[in-house]
Amino acid sequence: MAELLQALREIVSERNVLSGDQISDDYTHDECLNVAPVRPTFVVRPDSAEQVSRILTLANQHRIPVTVRGAGSGLSGACIPDPDGIVLSTERLKKIVIDTDNHVAIVEPGVTLGELDEATAPHGLCYPIQPGEASATLGGNVATNAGGMAAVKYGVTRNLVLGMQFVLPSGEIVESGGKFVKSSSGYDLSQLVLGSEGTLAVVTRIIVKLVPRLSHRMTLLAPFLSVEAITRTVPKIVQSGAGPLYVEYLDALAFAGACRRKNVDLGLPQEITSTAHAYMLILVEGAVGERVQEDAERLAEMCAENGALDVIMLPASKAKLVIDGREESFWSGKEAGMSDQLDVVVPRASLAHFMTEVQNISQATGTFITGTGHAGDGNVHLGIFQPDEQKRGDTIDRIFDLGQRLGGVVSAEHGIGVAKKKYFQKREDPAKLALLRRIKQAFDPNGIMNPGRVFDLEP
Ligand SMILES: Cc1cc2nc3c(=O)[nH]c(=O)nc-3n(C[C@H](O)[C@H](O)[C@H](O)COP(=O)(O)OP(=O)(O)OC[C@H]3O[C@@H](n4cnc5c(N)ncnc54)[C@H](O)[C@@H]3O)c2cc1C
Image (tube, rainbow, N blue to C red; front, top):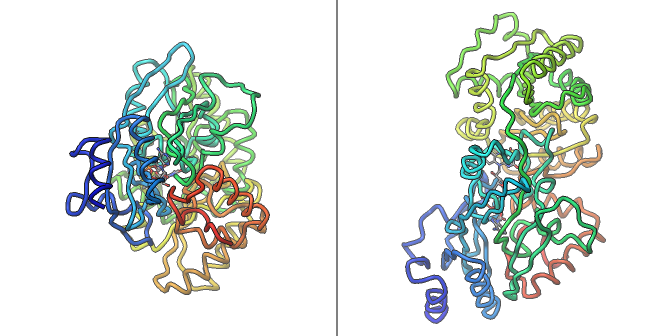
């Protein structure tokens, strides 16, 4: 170990290798509710791809597990390290270049979403993928294929990444893609590394597409009698051509929690708050104010025709608070004792059926379940309140079975990590799992990259 410590110090300097008490609790966990923290042997903080390459070469020679860490905002325990391993923190990999001619940003993986947003704003551009935590890094977004509210309009991380540089455990530095939208030149390795949760390679540079920052926005709030009524309306909203940026839903409890968290009073009449079981939040944006107004009015009519109890155009300041409260629903749930959060996705048209059956599962297992989510994507975030581990596992299993029967998957955007691994492996086709293992073997023959995450190496 002393020899390894010395070698790591020679690569990144003494102050960028942490061990023992120097390793703060931050490096031991992410935000997953039910995976215990683990203290690694070393934390290393490289500042270039060359340093990453030398660290990986060394770890590979000594067969030391390496876990890459961005901001640790993940929700699946994917960046929780191995006790005998190294945490490779990307906190010093912070360069940003904005290329306004090609409408791309070239960023190092430790850049946070908040930092990229600040850098793009003066150019009238933005990176539109906004998973709910602005402290998350671009490296973490790539590794989890993050989504968020704007996915209904812009897609998820994999739709916005044009290229990347990554480092293999062998130390080889690989370039993939570039500042262009089209490529028909062999396998797309960026797409393979996207969503691989640090199990294949360390991403050291990312080229992302930027889009115009649209200045006109309107937000609609539509209370409905049931979540099912909302989910039946969603496909019509998506098909309207208005191209909303957000189509979110919150059940009544999550909505009340969001408003209370942000201390916002919308002055809704009691006959609405006492009958509405769910709320739809729609944000429309555009370059021309009148057009945004027209689109918002059209969507409001559509909501009314489909059973909305009312449709309220929220003033910008209140809209921001409600949206922020919705973004922070994970923290509200956590404070209220939530024991798990699922991010199942099903085909958009199956969401109504899914939500009805989830209510049946909730009753059958005696588990309280609350929901918010990216209704426009068929992706719900279910807060599971069930302290009994066995009953919780049973409830989650039933929900995942239901999602699978409807053509969905275990995780839409939070990833598998360790928290969802057993549920993922149980449902995957063995032939596909075998292929995943062969791919892992090709990238990482000694199995040092974030071992035990996503799937086990042995069937
Ligand atoms: C309140 C809250 C709301 C959230 N809302 C959303 C949401 O709406 N949508 C959504 O998609 N997610 C959401 N998340 C989850 C989280 O923000 C995302 O998963 C995010 O992408 C993780 O980024 P990170 O930098 O924190 O990564 P980390 O948690 O540090 O790491 C996540 C994974 O990425 C790997 N990794 C990190 N950097 C690299 C790299 N350079 N190379 C290779 N692998 C790497 C890690 O090893 C790990 O496997 C939310 C989280 C919170 C706390």
